[in-house]
Image (cartoon, rainbow, N blue to C red; front, side, top):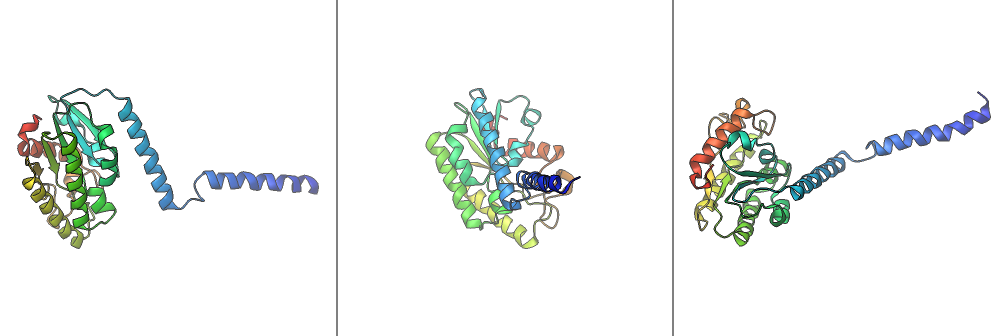
Length: 234
């Protein structure tokens, strides 16, 4: 290969390598890349919701990935249910999209909220409770007499022990908020076996990974939900 041809090819090769590096995401901060991917996935979920024609008189499930991954048809085969879960969604984002993602004339609502705020973002208990209370106000404004249930926030398999103690405070506060609501909101206590290991962390027996329940976990959660909120008709 002649020297002139080699000199001609060098910038082309460098340009190709730069393009691969840039568009392959190597130039992007990992945190920023994660946020970008999450927003793309969130947008896809919202687009999916907009295209659906859910039935009336259905129980709507709202929350983060624990809701998104819940096999509702398996858990509640005789009930109308609508899944409106979006993974990694904090409470304020659910509030922002609430009115446009509710199905028509729902018969009830089940919420699993605050997990991302507490477990992922590390927010203080008081702030998480405040946002959940604001979400309840939003729902009551839209649907004043809607029967509701709130599921207690789960730990992770590796939740630090100090944080596990704070989680117990969070769930006690959420239970009190539900009891004080008018009309009262059913609260599903998950701070117990088989969900909790003796150290307060998420038990491996009912989970499929660090955060999420397996089939046995969802079956038990469905059982607890029916017991706590029989008026939902699940």
